Image 1 (cartoon, rainbow over the protein chains, first blue to last red):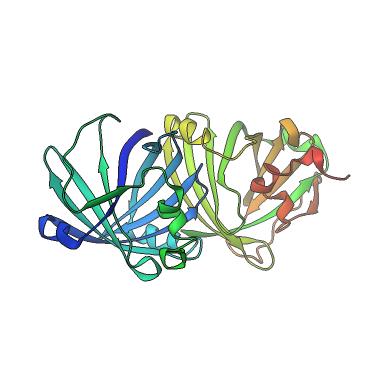
Image 2: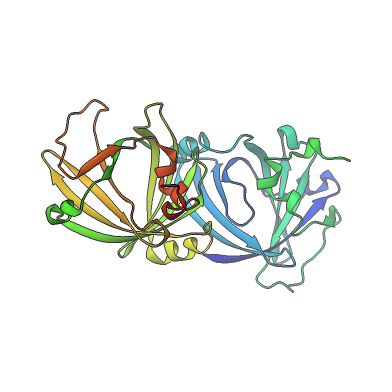
Length: 158
Length: 158
């Protein structure tokens, strides 16, 4: 199990799309959405993944994470057991200096929400801020994917 | 993911112990105890297992089950994320005709509870009834291990 250090931001414009090197459609469900022990099933192309995450630290930037690759068939079967509301999103990978951003454009009931994440080696790592990057939302639980499957973006008070 | 067909019974006496071919100490916790999607982490000797089970059928004898072997270290780390109350039990394997029983003797807050399970190929399979076998409790949710971790046996009204 690794400690995952990442910072999460809203995205202000579509300008990131022309910088993206890849885009992938992801489908994911949760066997548990409790922030202390989320259990996620993900389909990413022809691959499946089962991921367990613990609670984040006080600044919301690091969480314990354990991930195992499973087969596509296993992931498809496990998704049938997941809590209601399967999330679908397109993930764009965007190189930025010595780092890269993953930008998730959500679909369905979370359409309109676009978030960028950057994974860091240390919490204080410096990184370039692209012009399309918006407000930081690291650690805001309502932006957790597990919570978006329970309280989707289109139900939020805007 | 397989359909697991099994019947579960209480155990009336210690007589099963002299018929046991193996006994193993098991430690297990739950990343989710919801009966529709239980997620169990188990340590069995030097091995670890992650198991997902769905809801049982109406007679309580079959449930979808998916299991993956993981390392002991992974299991030890994942158990730290589990819901409170880790279960400990000793499991005895007992051959009986063309089948075998697994008898679980619980420890800690579930001490006093001893249950036997038999795994079947078909729901109507016939099997021998050992003299130590008690009342059938197949499908009684309070006897699920996931529920015993929330409502342990020593809190039940007797």
